[in-house]
Length: 161
Image (cartoon, rainbow, N blue to C red; front, side, top):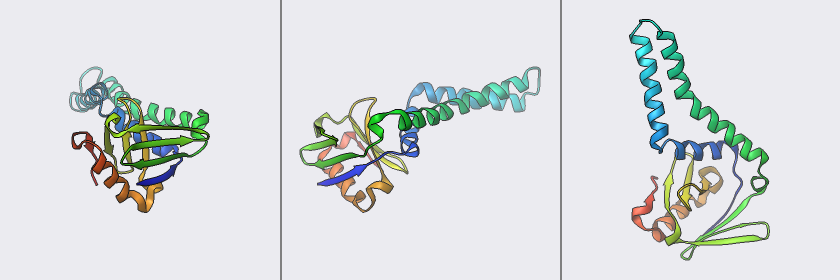
């Protein structure tokens, strides 16, 4: 059993948004096209080469920049982000509590669990997740990973230590 309170920062939410966006084909394709545009602009010094570099750079930088702005706005403007969220993870599932509201999701309802260098992310659906920043979880991190690994279907567990 793991019990922890999490208050996401802009950096934590940005980390989640980057991980989520850069696993989408459209984002990866735009980045590859951007890199190709910059490469062509640099090596193919013909007409419009500067335009190729600029368009390529815009394609590469657009997503990270907009995700940073979105993360900042969400943390700043969302009332739900102002207070910490209490999590209880046990063999029954994940219980999320904030204020006087509480909801439990059984492990078989979890979409998948992944990790980044900064966080453990448990997807509760294809597009929503609970984010556990490693710094905030602290010493309970090994127990958190063990609880997830023990209770979640191994096919859904993509956590790297």
